[in-house]
Length: 369
Ligand SMILES: Cc1cc2nc3c(=O)[nH]c(=O)nc-3n(C[C@H](O)[C@H](O)[C@H](O)COP(=O)(O)OP(=O)(O)OC[C@H]3O[C@@H](n4cnc5c(N)ncnc54)[C@H](O)[C@@H]3O)c2cc1C
Image: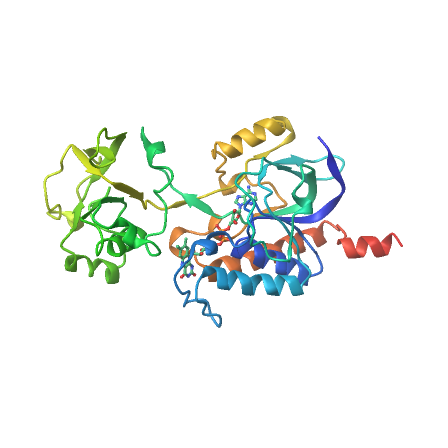
């Protein structure tokens, strides 16, 4: 395995709002980081925001891509470049001769994107392992899966936007799984077009905010089944609806909040043209291995691709910080929190590097003449 030497002081993994903010702050504090982004475009979730962003102080934006452009302009001015299409498959923690981390790149997935901004850098996207003394993981979240047989059948469309292409649900039977803001928002987006929208809610009540809940009764084609889970998803044969969902009552104890809310008795099987999963997001973090558990590169890639690398924060070794959605509770995930958390991680990492008496690249080259 080829390793780039010498060790860079700081690497940032993920170029969403948190990673970009961490990179800017590190650069401004004199510690130019190496930045790696798995996707072919920077911006993370902001790439998928197609409605106005009205809650980021001082920068209301038409949509996510506009905010990304503003962020990238700022980073360009600070001289930060981003290696795109470089998923970090795993991180190896080494203690000899000094503590450091080896970032193992995985296989690049997906086609190259034509719209890559000028500040980004594909040269770094090779297969070299990068050595860094400190690492900020700003790798965001991924949609939570149901974990039931047949889920792969709905893998492609289950997470797609309902605000952008609501018309594509015209006349269709749509099932939305979840009871939070995104589930209810999805139901409200789709209802004007769909024949019927069924919300399947595991708990006894909706968790969505009341402003959204209050809009539900005005859509007669939205129905809700509470305390309901999907046991299995099957593809339907023939010309009718595409999916058969085998349902069951959820185990949770009945709560007063949801008592009597189920509008119809639960059918054992529901058919649907579309199934949209809105059951929340979970942190996505590359696995970290110590010397004792060195897996080698292919295992690192396997673990990454299997997406089983979710790691508990308490297992993170000294020298690694987690920023943004990957570290934030669900209720606080936002651009503002991601940007703030990126700043925090960068400042902590820089203080730590200084405490370790590690030289920044600028200082090191000065010291070396
Ligand atoms: C539809 C939608 C609408 C939203 N609307 C708003 C809103 O109006 N206001 C608001 O404040 N917030 C909104 N949000 C939330 C906000 O976009 C996020 O909280 C924020 O962008 C999270 O930033 P992040 O950098 O923590 O994570 P992400 O944006 O998820 O970025 C993580 C990045 O890390 C990369 N990555 C992951 N793993 C690896 C790896 N192993 N190697 C290399 N790279 C990796 C990913 O490709 C990604 O680019 C919305 C989100 C969505 C999806």
